[in-house]
Image (cartoon, rainbow, N blue to C red):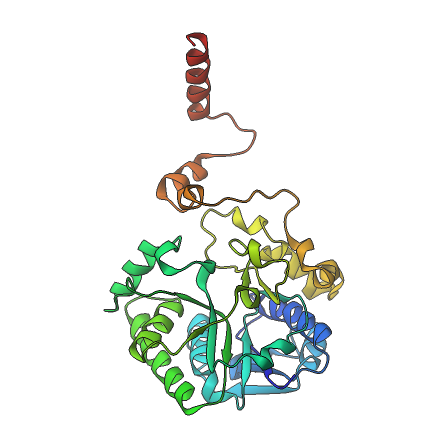
Length: 326
């Protein structure tokens, strides 16, 4: 394949982002042995590689190129990561497919060479924005830095991005970083709101990739069969239980990768569907919106499996009384 595969890493021994990237890049390399893999990192992270554990050397060996950006090491790790992401077009030469670390590559990616778009991404949560489960929260977040996203047809997920080396894309990324920093100044931590703002400001140059290129684990079941990349998305975990949907959302498994190498995750790399929990139920329509509501989140905090609940007892008694008079 002609297009590079790009990963970004900002990490320290206190987190498991390197282990995430190790699993994802391994899956990419195994299914794309001829691909050119690039790692973009910062000076603080690069200084720790080689001293983090026995997996460091194997991790670095996956990449054909390591690009180190001289970012201020005193900046918070999240900000350094976002600066690399919004600045990656300036740091990395050539066309590339950016892939978030919280992913597993499911098959060969050579088809990306035939995609004509200059800049492309998949819809966030695989929904048009009018049906986006977090539509109201996203609109309110964007309003905080003066951007009205309500009229947008698509709100894109930035976890997988096709980016070609064009003057227009260099301008896009320069403005994206500028908009991200403005949003960050008022407390907007995600980079997707500023990505949407930049897309709108430049006349909507971002084209839509088919959902198979960024199959988001909670909402992408219709794309799973033919998915190129499975994105298990460690963000948007609202109740503390969603991390059980996919095994790699759990820090414990990634810590085992640090200690033992890839052996604990070989089954998932070989067949990414094996990462799903054994018991899963799919929801759609109004149920989907209910599970995003404050009512559900309140109830979820109150629920503990196997533990007596006065709320459950009252509802059960009510059902019993209604059955007596039917």
